[in-house]
Image (cartoon, rainbow, N blue to C red; front, top):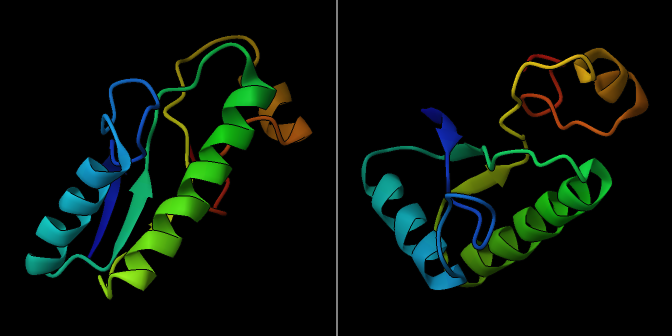
Length: 104
């Protein structure tokens, strides 16, 4: 099972407050049979910084889950608000779509 809308990445918007909370969420969803989570932190206007921070937090959390033998993989995404910059943001690679699908 895959959870495609989870606020698990620490410190990004209305997400987990810290890494321990993100790990606790992963432990709980693993008990429910979820093996992949597509993280959905809200995108802010400083797109480049946000994208790099999402990628960094996904990497750090996945590293921690592996170290703690938690069978959940976090995949990157951003929660996108509809605006005039969506198409150009996707084309320029500034927006992270639903994993690698191109879907928002």
